[in-house]
Length: 244
Image (cartoon, rainbow, N blue to C red; front, side, top):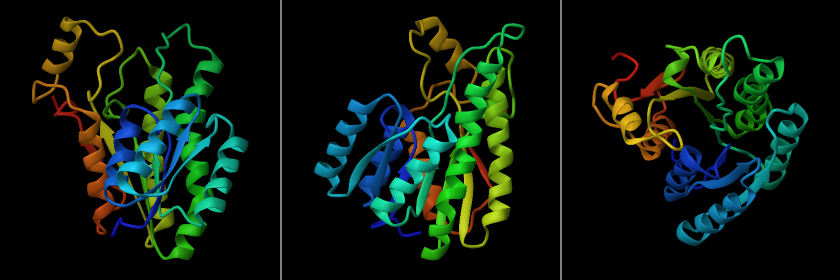
């Protein structure tokens, strides 16, 4: 897909990986719908930066993705503003530690609603306009640990495993006009407050013996958007952590 002049909705775009993806797309001439939930000031600052640096359209859309109503209202607002979102990047994610035996239904629902249900309903809401436009791309930001879960964040890992299943199902349901792929980040950002020893252990667990960056994920997203013969794929960007 030629990216210049296309419109993209990036969820969770104000910070971290989402911000890197938004910057990479704007650099290639993509207009941005910048979604946020709480990071409104950061989202507005990013939108101003995208307009100033790259001359693209950039608008902020606030929504709590744990609510289907808010999710669908945001999709409608994006379509009202941009007419079509040729690209959807499902990046926003809840990531909280939940110990087995102490996980509540609210903990479970928080992760599944935002990380799995919201990508489905956003895809469902935006796909008709993509089809009318003749083509579209959906990128789901999953996680390598969706394939190799551990025990400290079970609701999160389950939501990402579900997102990988959804990725395959959407690729089948939306072909041939809409291509759907996933990126599986590994350690591209250290947990907040990580000690030097923690950082060293995280890096050592990868085959490449280092931590990546949000820009590594953004480059993978761009690759999948520009290639028109890949759908249903799940691309690890993890320094070899998945196979280590």
